[in-house]
Image (cartoon, rainbow, N blue to C red):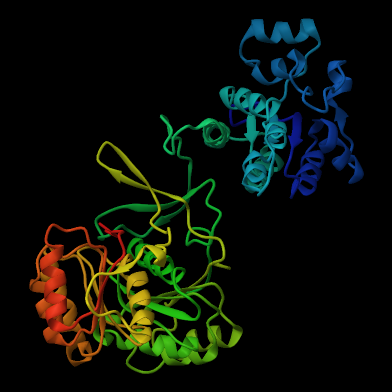
Length: 525
């Protein structure tokens, strides 16, 4: 035992799928006097780097077989990892059977998650990436962490090597920490395999058991309020463009509320045709627009509610260019954070040097939006989670129907489509007023629909004249129709389905307002 009351690291068992960083780590171990035992491809990889490696098959006297399915499942391997160094019977068993102890085990698992995420992967291909020996080695070493160090991630190599180089051993505190990470990794791995088989055999969209694997990406300064602690976790299978995997180009760390607002911005902007801009404040759009250029769309989106836009987050669905950045950097404007597929170099230069808020603005680059968001949403309630399909399914216009005497004209139809696309991203009760593919008024989160209509009209002011109106759910009464007509609304789109539909249709006909029923509601609570 060393000065840390820890066994000196004399032997390491190394068997990894991800070999990035392995050669430098192995060289450091050899320099510290550690003998390396390895298997198959890992052994050949290290030998190609001119490192002396002991073949596990030579040590066990048992060859690898079955295309590598059987390599390390052997008592001479398991015994060397699981033996307790302070137990006389364990150590006597090692001596009797010619087993050497391993003080370090370096294993990362077959890339099952990456394999099953590939389009077109076959069941046979997936099954061959289910690791058996790897998890056995990992769990054995983690269980015996009082004497064995377990490395399951290349990010751990530097700390392990530093302690071995300095003291010949690792500290109990590090081994305990690494053991926890190891058990978390095997749990995540098993959940991924279980989830894959659940999808293969599911006869309903929501399985009886749902395993959710989360990895902490970072701690946040605080939650929604300064007295609340918070952290950001990443899903193991989060593949689409998202904020968790985004690249932050500039600015101070994101807050809990920044992330919520940016997520709303990304969800809305990815549903719009290019080029489009959305302005989000307190998790609702206060402006959104589509135009022939991103700069023009940004100008129109900001004009939707310039007062609320101050201190907002902004989302784009195409590359941010210099003209767009220049508009945002104008005096009198203030933006907390921006999310986009990409930023060109000149845009980054403008946003990080010109405005007064340049030092703190967060720039988040998420990459192509071609791949949609996750198909399923989870939302926690006290004691559990709610699960639902993400509300991204398109509403076929073939199912829309004009229910009034007059029909929308071509120009109104363009705005109705846009208003309907935006409306599903507004907190219910949701009302959106649109003119020329730009939001000019929003009523969000009100307890009554008529209050949302009044709020949207008040926000739009004189701009309400000539707009179209979208409602995320049906109008139960005709009072909102009269208010909209008086404000100058020229056409309405809504799901329909109320017992009061006839009176609502009658009110629209009275005012000469075309109205369409989509047949589908879009509440967002």
